[in-house]
Length: 420
Image (cartoon, rainbow, N blue to C red; front, side):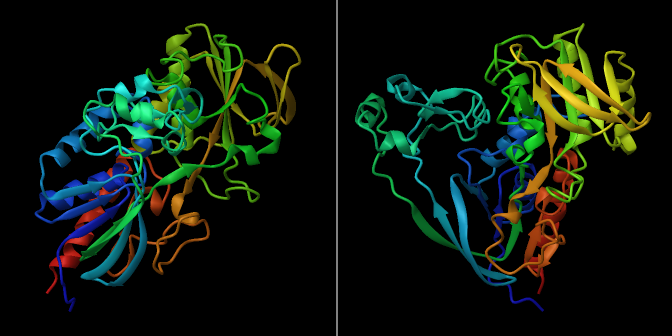
């Protein structure tokens, strides 16, 4: 029998699976602490332009969850926060949380006066560095919480005081320091999500070398109104409207030298992004270079619909090398057509690499002993008694699967703390 000291639940990670676990556990009557290392909740989903297969905007679902959090006093959330240590056992976990300085306190009304007074600019992390923002910034237009952030470089700069003086609400604290606090909880849900595979490691595919080679996560931001071009899909090198776009599947995935596994959603993500191009440019031609297409169950019809577009060409073959054409910025793809056994050279205006999902636990493991698989995912839903993995922490998955997994983890956590 479990000797439960407290029935509170800690959820680590504020993406879709973590949000789901938090609101489900809270609405079942449990005190919930939600910890997120970013300055906003929503995770990678907040950076998407649309979901597949319905092609609806992600903030429909996110806003519902944010409202559920705001209306439930059993949820306490902490952004810019990380778990430093975990000790104890099921029903009685002692957890140390580190709060990193935001340099902006709860008095912030998101009025933007600090940003207006700021001249320093930084690469925009929300848009994967494709544009610049002021160093006093709102993480993105729909950020939750609606609270500004001061970049550490600005906080230490000569203009910091002028930015502070511009705030009419005394919300800026330039001397804010990291601090830690302790929690005692009965169960833990670990939902720290994923990161895109580092495409600069794919030497032959030109990312980081040729400006018109993007990754799939960058394409989401390029197509979004809040992105670097206000939703206009153009080439980064010259602002040209692309008339030929190539999506390169399995960029680093299913490759023993990089990521040996399949991330399961990349085929669907590229097909979704192909519709972005076709909506903006009715005459554009899109190539999807693939090993095989993985679209199962209800997703098969989405694949069928996309494939019916005569301007979207599904090309069975793995791209071996990408080079830039001298003087034009166009890209030359060298690829074998595996259905015909022929070598091809195809010129396009823009390339999108479908990089896979790397679990964040592969580089930032849980600070207590849990089992992992060969790729760094937590090996099972119940990582150990009283500690449960959810979403892409344990397996590559889409949004709907992450929601289901978050619900399952919440149920397991609840069952854990109510045992007698």
